[in-house]
Image (cartoon, helix red, strand yellow):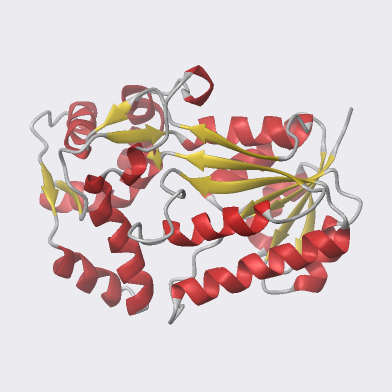
Length: 297
């Protein structure tokens, strides 16, 4: 049976893939966005575009009404002077729209590490959102606790090409679960379409296994013909200056880097892996099908 499904964040890495899957399955998909022009292709394929954003409770409420399910994601705001205050406000907007609209099924994009409410940088906000959504009465919520996105390595392609190294502020030798966003999107789309969850629950999505940043860099190196490609942990202050130079607010950067630095303390390794949390796309498959085309473009 066709469902009416609302997606927030359809211009993002995960939301766009969720939208594609659901449109292909014939569902009635509504996409809320500030930038309708970026979703023209999905509109051409049948999606309804609602111009608005997460700051407009009225638009959220009206769009949620009569929907079967909604996909929520807490968007970043690189200009926010106080990241936690911003995150708190957006979560409050979601809660008000959910209660006013009467929507009963919410798939919430979260992250591994969201069991902690401090010491994990940006993830403290997603952790708080989980707690606040869990306080809703008579609303079914499943929290998708995703592993570290393999797609994040696409952001360092310029460094690999320009300096012959791969690097972030994270420790290179601490293994964490890593997942391809196409696998996360499949899990999310299935829950949105099947409404197969009741009450409040957590669904971890953890990729095929844990990888260190150095190990993943070696896979990238082999893929691009440089098997000796090194991973370099970038000093926090150096990384901070790079982000600030790109116009990000200091508080946003501190939260972003706080998350990266804290990885070595194990907050991404809390969730237990089982068959339901394990997805198929390996680092090698990701590099061959996603990374290499981007690298060669």
